[in-house]
Length: 185
Image (cartoon, rainbow, N blue to C red; front, side, top):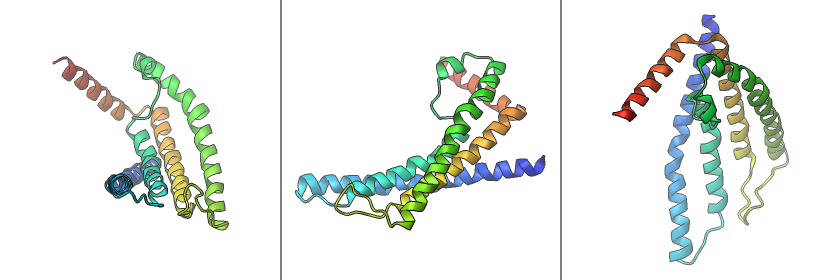
């Protein structure tokens, strides 16, 4: 069991590292947007590359952040119902939803993003969004890697659900109780 826990911790740390590494892209992304606005509206000389560059950098931020968001339980879900459930109800929902919704969709995304990535590199695909036409292989590789990281983090989270990791549940319950107490004060 300690071997599996070690693998799970490694996957979690990998997602943590990836998210913290790409979070710094917000600064070049902000610069690119400000630069384009300045060039377009002040200098009246719009650039041909900022549109593609912006969505690729932003896409990297969002894609790589998926595993990190799952790790910290900040993905969107029907919290209005989920938070009203007792621990056993949450367990049943998680035991049903992870295999039926999460794994089914993420495995399909891993599968399809692999072929998108491979075809982009094999055929030298370029973006047709602007006249700049950058290669799409790098961003499609980021998409594939991020889907693999999300899938791996999902496996770790589902294993925690199955195991009923008491320590994490207790820590989370204490944090929620503290947050509720802090709101009332």
